[in-house]
Amino acid sequence: MTCNEPPTPVLRRMPLTELPAGTSGRVCELAGEPSFCVRLREMGFCESAVIDKIAGTRMLICVLCETRIALSDAAASHILVEPL
Image (cartoon, rainbow, N blue to C red; front, top):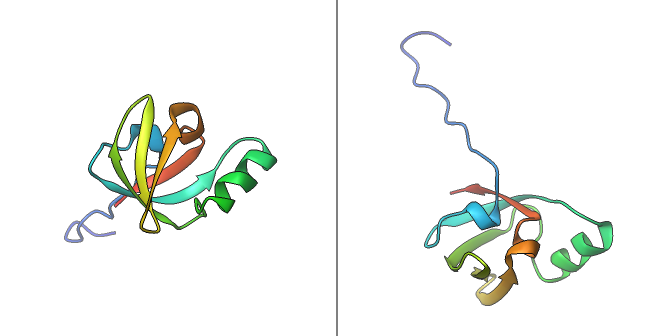
């Protein structure tokens, strides 16, 4: 990289619980027990899916595939996203 090139933006991965309400994120990774990750995928939380976080800290409300989903903070902490 030369001095004239703009820096490459670095997207920070974070748990869905840390994504600010009113913003969107792309699922990067699902963490936790394999059976739990399978259940999240069945609900639509697949890698590369886009999530809109509507509200919440202890209980989150998200929009995924045009469907509102409520998640506990424990479940949401296993979904790693990159802010969009």
